[in-house]
Amino acid sequence: MEENSSKPQETPPPDEEAQERHPGDVVQRVSRDLLMAELHWRDVAQIVVGACVLCIPVSYTEEVWVLSEQLPARKAVFVALFSLTFVALFVYLNFYRRNMKANAWKFVGRVAATYFITGTVAAFLLFSIDKLPLVLDTATAVKRVILVAFPGCFSATVIDSLK
Image (cartoon, one colour):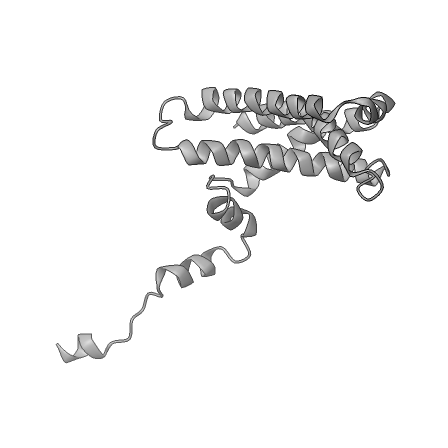
């Protein structure tokens, strides 16, 4: 009996073990802790690629640049809510329809993560072509991101649903 009590513990505590298995897995920790969604690197990559499918051509059009200057802020909010609603509907029907009660926070997190990642892609694309006037005209910059992310979030959601 003394041998068992003097024997050092071979398995590390659960937190240390998780850190050893997944060093630097920042995306998974952030998505799990902040967004409460199960996002893996593959999901993030699919969302980024899907967002690029439609964000790239839309971000290069002068019509979007002009529209973002002329569009009232309340209409931009409507566009954002419209796209969020349809992304949420698509995600619900494809991922969470059968077990929504147990996964409500994961559902909200997945929709939020998809829209956030798409918005980040849109902002990066606009910034890279010098069409994101964050300092000079923040309202126009936000409206441009919303307008470019509008089609991008749909393509990101569809690409993410492919397995």
